[in-house]
Length: 236
DNA sequence: CGCGCTCTACTCCTTACCTCA
DNA sequence: TCTGAGGTAAGGAGTAGAGCG
Image (cartoon, rainbow, N blue to C red; front, side, top):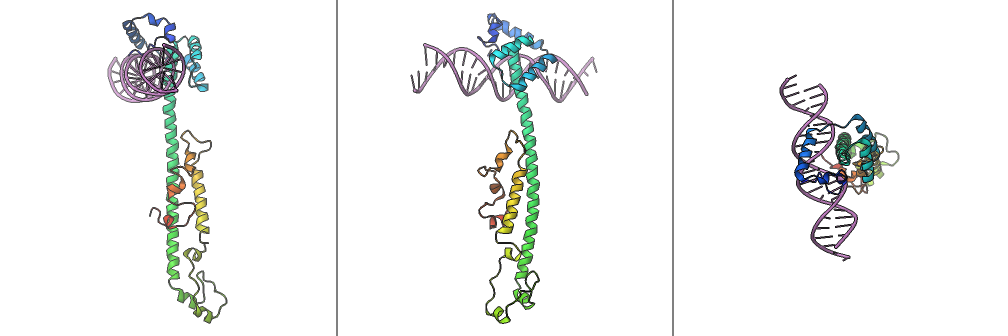
C-alpha cells in the first residue's frame, strides 16, 4: 500500500503524483538511504510550535514546511512522531505518579494495621479486667482505679449496674472516639492520595465516593457505621 | 434519512538509518 | 575499527470522520 504518498495532498503540490509507483518506490528508497536528521534550527522551531499546539492545521503545516525548507509530509510526520514520544513520556510520568501513590497508601495501610493491632490488644486487656467485676467492686475502685463514689453496699447488691461497653470502658464514646479517629485517618488518606494540581491520570478521582477505589471500599468500612465488625475484622 | 464509497489524516507498530559510547 | 543500544525519520496497516452521490 502506498499510503505514504496520498494523492491530492501536499505531495500533489510537489508534483509527485506525476511519478509512477515504481519511481516513487525508488525515490522512497533513496530518501531512506539519504535520511538525515533535521538541523538544530529546524528542530528548535518545530519544538517551539509543538509546545503551543501538538496538532497542526493544514495551512500552518504548509507555511511551516516552507519556512523550514521541508516537505509538508515531513512536518506532519515529525509532529506524529513527536506526539508519540510525548505520549510515551507521559505514560512514564503517570506510572511514576501512580507508583508513588501506591507506595504512600501501602505505608499508610501498614501503620493503620499496626494501630489496629494495638487497639485490639488494648480491648483484650480491658475485657479481661471487666471479666472480674466483683474483685473490682470489693476494692471500691473503678476500672480506672478511682473510687466509684457514693452508693451504699446495699445499692450495690440490689442490682448490678449495666455492663459498660468496651468502648466506654476504654474511655471512648460508643462511636465517638474510633469514629472520629477513623474520619481523621480517612481524611489523611484522601489527602495523601491527592497531588496538588493533579496529574493526567487524575488520582484525585480515587477520593470520589463513587469511585470503585473509594476509601470506604478500599478499607472495607462504610462511613455510616464506622465502628462495626467489618472494621474490627478488616484484613486480620 | 440511511447507505456505501472515497478521501484525508490520524494512531500504532515497524523498519532502516544514524550517532555515540 | 567494530559493535550494540538508543534516537528518530519514514513506511505501512488499520481506522475514524467528513463529504458526496
